[in-house]
Image: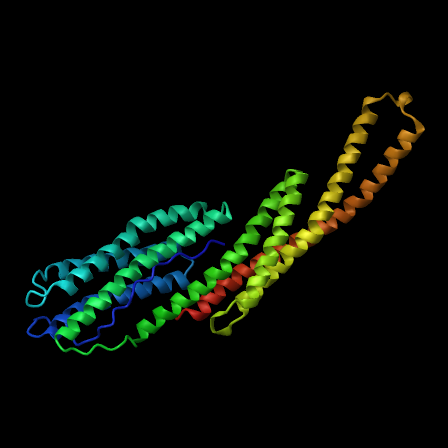
Length: 344
């Protein structure tokens, strides 16, 4: 399951009545508020689409709509060349915020999507992808802090009281930030064992005994590390649904390392011994084979035939449990986001 990518643009805190002429500083803020409110609502549609839709086209359409709303607001704010009676500090900071937001949603978005394409090739790639995504959000938030600071400076200069954003839209965005962050933390724990398990399966398919041993040891280590992290993990609103799903994956991965991998190695070693013995027997003429060699070979054949059934049962059992654990995590992760991120 690929992690969800989204950018969270701040909902600006000003909510005054609309006005078109700047006879007063409040009129000026009203005009700006009207433009930023459009961006805020479009941002929420984008965030909501990411949370509740699996349709990549729909998500990208809302992203492009958001970009257009930013571009439209930029043109209107740029036209306010004099700001309010020559005071352009707040205007300039707003333009800087809009420019960076547009850049992140276009250029940086493309870079991150490219990173996402290879993210599942290793844990390091996945971690780098998430760090890059978070850096994009951090850059936007940094500009938001500057913007809010300049807004307060402007308001204080003209004796305007600005309260904290308590709008429904602001609350929704705050919630979505917290939910996605909670999901991401658990996803990284899940992904580390899931990726290691996939490497282990590849080693088994290639009959690479050394790689099987190395990756089964790593799988046990990462499963234990993950279980330790879950002991102190703070779930969103104490909802344990995704924590429990993660725990099931970790517990299965640990059992896979301790029970399945050793069983696979034992069967492979027996089969390897049989193949070596068979080659020796095949290389000898029938009349050149000793009774002891024939007895030993037949014993190996009987042991292998017996172990084939045991191995197949073991393989079927763990394949089923693995599929159930991973599917359960994926479904639970989707349900967790859908449950907690508000719907329009």
